[in-house]
Image (tube, rainbow, N blue to C red; front, side, top):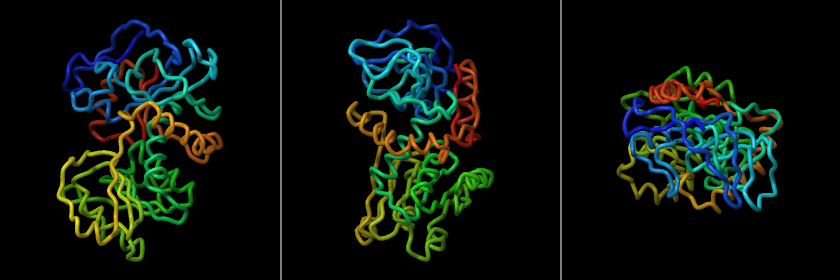
Length: 328
């Protein structure tokens, strides 16, 4: 099989396409012929040696999500048959013509979705659903602040929050991404200064001085103080990324006065049972929305596998809105 392969650690120049041995499914596993695989920032970090995959997963073959057709079944698999259209999150190795997945991690692709759309779905929607509802406790009528609103996870979170009856405030460093986000439901956009991002005052203005009960943050350290200032009493900050650094001073007195919470989350390193639970929650709540078209994956571009290097470079330039997908 062909696969994206990292020939070392570093920039996009280490990306190659290699022929590797076809994987063989063990008990409980399904072999999937991949038609589309989403690109994620975790792939870029892995390429640089900054985000190793879970034990037993290759450090050299990236890919955290895929969509394709069932090729073969391991012993004991009963839920699927060859030819079924499926999608899933993965610990890695998904940017290849064939990938293995545990039977319970697979979700059937709604008829409405093409393979590129399905390849852009799982990481974004499972992550955002988990952050909004399982961790954030989102309720109808809330206002939610979503940072980096042009990212794949953020565009999914924006749509899921709106479908749940929430008002979404989004931030971006580019006006174009705010305009594109408005087209999929963003109600209040805040354009950030690249040198000194400030948003708490604007959030307070939008919320009549109360602040927001929930913030989804992909930036981390650079936004922590402003996040806390923008938070309502009893609010929660769910940190999903650290693009702006991982360490920052925390005003514990303000955190205590607001009775607030800062929650960190990652999906990839979780034990299988926790990832299965997150996948089932996604399937219960999100598949009907995806199937009806009320929400949809936002695909920025679909590139062939042999243009993986160009896809990495586009993501590193922050040029994309929504998801970049590799087609096989």
